[in-house]
Amino acid sequence: MAGEFLAVLSVTALLVIVSVFVNAELRELANINVTPNPSKAPWYFLGLQELLRYFHPQVAGVSIPQWLILGLMAAPYIDRNPSNKPGDRKLAISMWTIFMLMFAILGMLGSIMRGPGFNFVYPWDAGIFFEL
Image 1 (tube, rainbow, N blue to C red):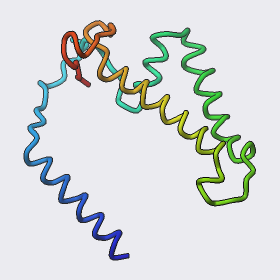
Image 2: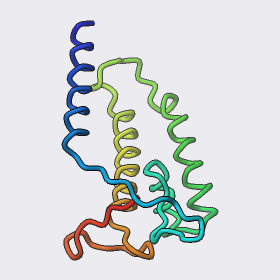
Image 3: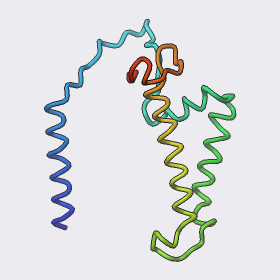
Image 4: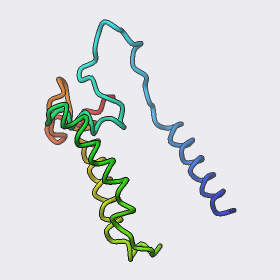
């Protein structure tokens, strides 16, 4: 228990130090008459917003998330290996890795590589456009 407590104290101290030295400026007060450009979803919905950019809303908002959720629900039944060792659970680890990579890639595309007008911008051309 002492190891976990030490880890919690370390992470808390690191967060306090970072919050003291990083200047996270607030933007102006919200104006209901002006929509920000680009209007981005919160970070946890950026993947869905990115899918909506490429696919029809029925496919991106219903079908793909439905199959992802059903696939994750079926994972314990697909990989019926009773072992608890990660080295023996190749299928479960592969499925989880693919899911997390898709989530991370779509989230990074939506947050870093979308500029004004929700157009695709290369970070090495105009710099990283990060505005939530």
